[in-house]
Image (cartoon, rainbow, N blue to C red):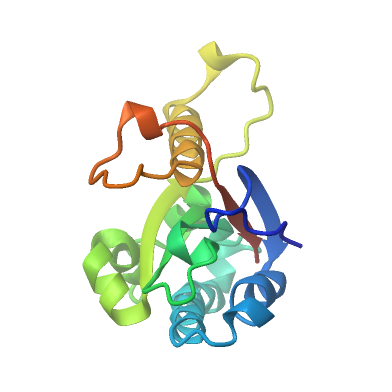
Amino acid sequence: MLPDFNDHGHLPPGRYRLTITQAAEALVDAERFRASTTRAQVWQGFQEYLYQFIHLEEQFATLLQGRELIHSVWLGGSFVSAKRDPHNVDATLLMNPDAERAIRGNPGSKWLTTAFKSWKAMQDRYGVAPLRIPYVPVAKVFQPQDFTAEELEYFRDRGRWDDWWQRCRLPGEGEPSVQSAAPVRGYVEVTL
């Protein structure tokens, strides 16, 4: 489960791995959020957003040959804080590029593009602010000179967003700064 939120309303720095059921229990159904007027609705939108990928997996099961589109999802921002009524959930989806390539371009696969095309549209419709990271398993991480372009992109994006979700803007700060770059909060990794 999740550690307690600190005095600033954040998890301690780090990534906390939960199942989707555990995440709902900790971030929606927990006693501290019973009075929330937004968390259940935001979570429902998040589930509806994820269902679109599950629907694609069912629709293209033959082409996918057992591969899943989503490896895991990182949740961050105000939804992963003590804030009672967050307005959305920031979700970074670690996507399987081989699975995406297997179905992209087929009739009915447009969601792969739509899901990440417009942050505003996804927030308005589902309450989700989505980001995509290609999840590329790499066997020999100690030989970066041998990485493919896709593997380099994976490590770059994974590190960048892991860094980002552990930052917090300083009070009164509109934009991120060097002063706010140190890790001060945690985020949740949801396994599906």
